[in-house]
Length: 260
Image (cartoon, rainbow, N blue to C red; front, side, top):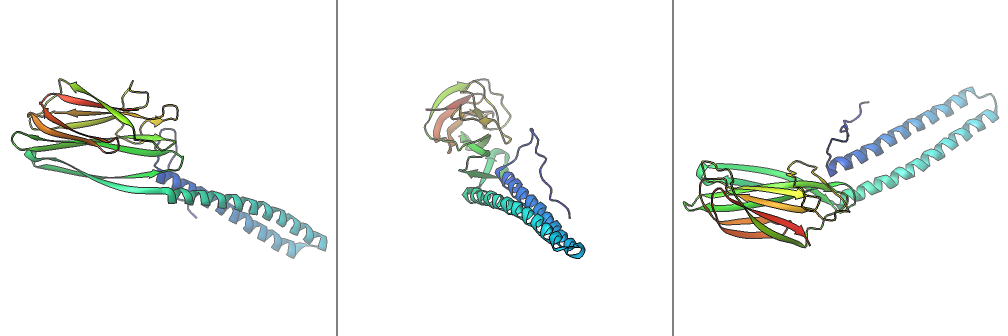
């Protein structure tokens, strides 16, 4: 019998909530397999005792030994049942969602589509969260440009995205390219805005109860060769929806989301 492959869980590896649930189910399966071997061994013990016992006392002694082992197995089975019920509850309280996003630059006739899956849960174990910010604008020539970026972080409790306030500040000296373009960079801070991380790859930084809420910073950069008009900036999870009337090439705007 071959065993299923289990991720090499080391301090540097990142696992999703689905991986956690699969590992828990695998642990239950392995323990059940071990108990099955124990029961098989006890059955062989009884067969051996029946064939080789020289007295009734020997049979009673073998029966007492088997009963003792079976009582221990039953206790273990009850613990495994509780564990399995908790896993099933975790699975039922988890929800999966899929988000499809498209980034388009009309002037270069390039379209890129990406699809990502996220899983959220209300249960208090480590889970990964994903937040997306986007910006869309138009040049005076009528070319539409758009961009988006996301940030990941993991936590031991469900975050509360409500009650954020935004501050806005200009950004200068943005490197420019040869065509109309816009860039969004979303960053996360877990130390009250002192340090910012581009957590584009999960699991991202860990948010603790001591911090309370993560801070976010959204950078909207005109890195193209044209002025952009009516740039729509959105971040549904943070409640950000605003319009930058004019965004000159080579400059940008920083939005800092600070929890109230």
